[in-house]
Image (cartoon, rainbow, N blue to C red; front, side, top):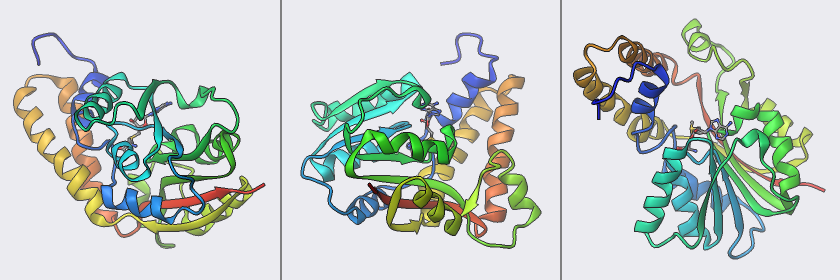
Length: 254
Ligand SMILES: C[S@@+](CC[C@H](N)C(=O)[O-])C[C@H]1O[C@@H](n2cnc3c(N)ncnc32)[C@H](O)[C@@H]1O
């Protein structure tokens, strides 16, 4: 894999993050729990999964909904993983991938019964994302999203440092108000369990960091990326009770 020069930090970033089972905290049981919290989803719904990444949740949604899914991401290798897994599970006829920037989505209004996005909608700005999704939903359509939130009012300096690049982060209450302001009624919400950070994300990331430290020993760009990834994990361990991912399930109001 390292037969060509690869000093670009972005390439190493994807060597770390792109090889993990999921591209963010989450787990199949939480995806299913959130889907089952939705009210009024028709049989065989039309679903849009924004920022699908490697698509673990896409596969769960296809299995439990019986519907058709558009899995959208702007990173082609993730979409290739989704396509390969869908083929292996016999789900290709119901999962279509779209390589697109979520900020320039051009689906017709009212296309989807359900819009999903685990750990990705914040890329548009969470409020802007909520507003952009609403017209794409059919009347009464639902959204299922995870968003990084503050879980406590007291915030340690470690927590503030860890979340430094997420200035827009809110607590659950303020997010609930935001849903309402953006034209949704919240049907339910819950905090992702600690295991969704450790088992499916940071555990595999630690293993990947160890592996790459061996193979990329003499590459400065790689060391920088690996140090940052390790600092992210260690930082999270210090503040994991103060912040977390909240799963929100909401319906478009008219
Ligand atoms: C934190 S990952 C979450 C991936 C997946 N939902 C999961 O939970 O494993 C965020 C995803 O959003 C994608 N992404 C980031 N910016 C994007 C954009 N502007 N348009 C489309 N996808 C984007 C990334 O490629 C990545 O797959």
